[in-house]
Image 1 (cartoon, rainbow, N blue to C red):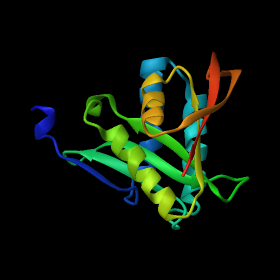
Image 2 (cartoon, rainbow, N blue to C red; image 1 turned 90 degrees about the horizontal axis):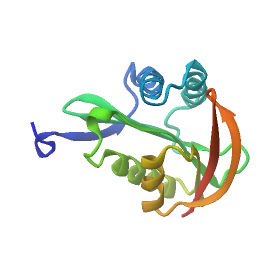
Image 3 (cartoon, helix red, strand yellow; image 1 turned 90 degrees about the vertical axis):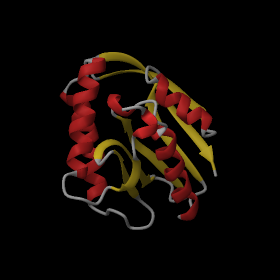
Image 4 (tube, helix red, strand yellow; image 1 turned 60 degrees about the horizontal axis):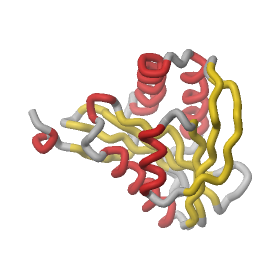
Length: 167
């Protein structure tokens, strides 16, 4: 089957198992690809858990990308805890089997569309410099690097980055 034959659908993450899939898949993929441990999965679980307290309230949303009916990607829009005019982009992921189908760009575009519709003035995100494919998606969407710092996370030294897009 070629990529042209595959059906990609974006939908809200509102079905049983969607939020658990986000946590599980992040944990598994990052362990396989980057040897990150349970501390990373725990961080994702905290993000998803905080979202689950107020899902889909108009200022926050989570999406699942499906390829031929199977979960293959995700992203979340949540408000910044310190600035009600700023949204955060969280937990962007495209499963390895679905990369190259444009899912990452579709998820980011949908996230930004809703952020604008919800009245946010800017979107920020936190990432690590080693996640080059995600960083390229952010740059193409117009995000600009706002801050960098060195830190030790998930058993490794990293360059943490904050990216911002003014809407």
